[in-house]
Image (cartoon, rainbow, N blue to C red):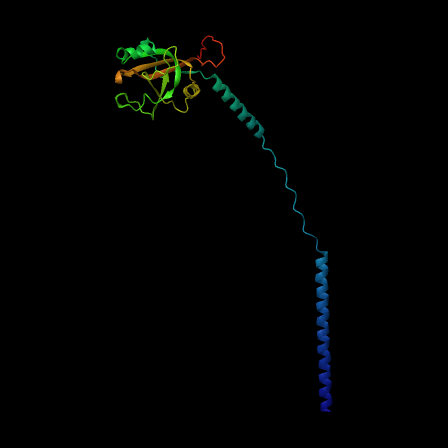
Length: 225
């Protein structure tokens, strides 16, 4: 009897364990099915919303127009700049001379204001860095004029001019636009006669007319005032 009872208990336990395992298997199948169904039902990721067009700031076009107008006005002002370098202070007792007379008798004009007319020949360094009549190249520029009725530069006439500031449009425009043959009226003061030659501090320049181009007919001077 004891053996039969033991066998019955073993058999019952085995059947019960098999049922639990079967139940676990069914539970796993159901769980996997639910997961697959959820994965199938999942919606695709939403596309990013289109970027809204940039709005133009009010007044932006107006500012651009104002900038263009300002540039046009600036160009117009450049055209209207007078071709003249005026003295910082009014000059008195100015002696009207010729370049030749200055060279012939420089000591007669030492310390005096002079004014003459001559054709521009070009820029140089002749009037700079010479100690007896010192005008440094860091602060001054030098130029030559022609001998009357010729194209020969007057190297004996030393002309020194202070370098204008970058903000001085009138002076810079005139100096950068000078061409060989431009007729100038030069005013200055003879500050030295070193080497028995006139050394002049140029105080004012006025372009009376521009150099004639090849083929131009002779005509009157152009007043740059």
